[in-house]
Image 1 (cartoon, rainbow, N blue to C red):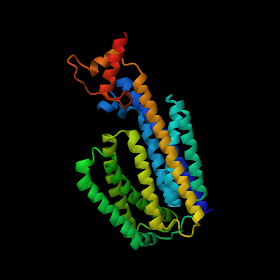
Image 2: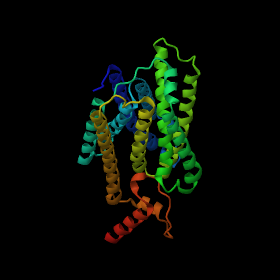
Image 3: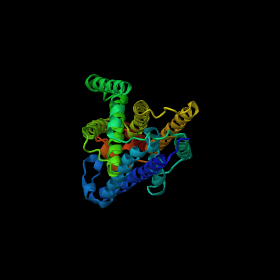
Length: 350
């Protein structure tokens, strides 16, 4: 067991991060609902009334606090420990949605939560000790070792191929293209965040690292990677269903981040085979629990979309007199074709 004092700090910060980020989704959703009911225009159809809603801003501030806590966590604990704990934000969001938004958490969803918690605890118990670093130049040596340079080169080549060749042809039909770009760049951004966070931690402890150009280089890499990552993540979310993007992104991003950390920071060096296998098993359990939660929520949306009656006003908007279909905004209502079929079925039973 390598659960050191720094690991404990990173663990607590990662838990706080998951709590704040999970809660932020619920607060922002309540803010969006409140703004939509006041203005009559939803954000999904171009409304911006939420920008004047204090509750929405409270959610944004909560999310920023969570991201800052996550940033600092990487300065204390290895990515192998911090990154999988991000799944706990899904549990927080699901539980709060059950009690606050009245979005029912089914038995399979509860099982998914239990799996995430159990897997996370296995990862925490068998997490490696964080290597003691005394300067940013040490991190630079790790970043310029042959094995990690080969990983960076592989990532950049893959991203270039995905962006230039696959994105124009298959980006809007295959979820792996946009999500792959996000995940590959995300693994580099986490390594840079960890390097930058460690430099700032040493600076605050009295060992100024801002005088070294390596610190500023890592900062530049963070900005570049995060901008690229967010750009393609937004494209993925805009093109595909969130219930598909989220689990695929979490699996790819977390796996690549752990791989990059193992190569750069040698997280598994000195660990026994049993501990490494236990960490991998715990990670797999977390992934399974996360996907089970997502599938349960998506199934619940599908059931609602099939069995909820469609109001005459909405039906009229969807199907005009000549049978043409109008656009529908809203994830839970299903496709316009399905709604028109349901409308016909309702008409036949009247």
